[in-house]
Length: 352
Ligand code: ADP
Ligand code: MG
Image (cartoon, rainbow, N blue to C red):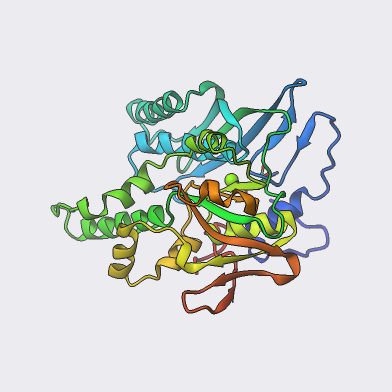
């Protein structure tokens, strides 16, 4: 049992996930010349030789917190566990090269189940051209745990950090937002229906895009290639794992800037719009706070606008301002609303 000498204790909820990380890691000082970037971005950057840098990122997925095996097939889980890590590597403008996979399993899982998990991992490794080079296996008394570490490489000096955004830069997002969260709502609803009537056959066809975005997300490996083709270098970049608002706030905090985000510019798939109506949810709130989109969010110099404006993969959704102007959503009606991080926070007792 942990005992605090002076009997004081602070609830981790008071700090939140990011506050907790800051608090626990604030005393770590970089000692190695080769550590180019330590804690605080999508991945760490380590210099390797005079031409290349290595990026490394790790993520932990825990049953009951990050996934529910009653609707998440193990094969998809394996695939998704790899993809969410690779997304962080792409967010550094790097190319993933290797992963390690660590699992903790209970005897609830037969070998065949774990084979399924690994079939998904193998499919993703093939799809993204990465080698599985190690990991660790241990027993768990409760649920399944998967931790994946991804490594990648980037040309020296070409890594893109959260910290490079400048006032007047444009804020750009790839793809569309909110679908993975709505996919989760659909799957949760079907789970409840199934509990009451196990013979019911769900018709998921009208929600196919949403369910696919939740169960089989892809990382944007095409974007660094696209940006090279159109000769655009982002000034800052991050991937969208926790929701648009949380990621905008990360860029603004790291870059010491403000931002205006325009509600009417946020890209939404028609299935997101119609399903939000069905669930009586506000689609902007879902795009801002839903998470698990694994799209890329980046800033570019205003001069690059002509190169990106007509690109179907890219949406300009706002612009960067001076820090003192704050971080705001400009609503369709023109009202300025302060943006707050409502990203899903596992350290909170309940979601709000
Ligand atoms: P992401 O959402 O991109 O995966 P996180 O919010 O998990 O990023 O992490 C932010 C930063 O904090 C990263 O640099 C990550 O490596 C670091 N970090 C997260 N948890 C810990 C921890 N327990 N100890 C040390 N560093 C951590
Ligand atoms: Mg990230």
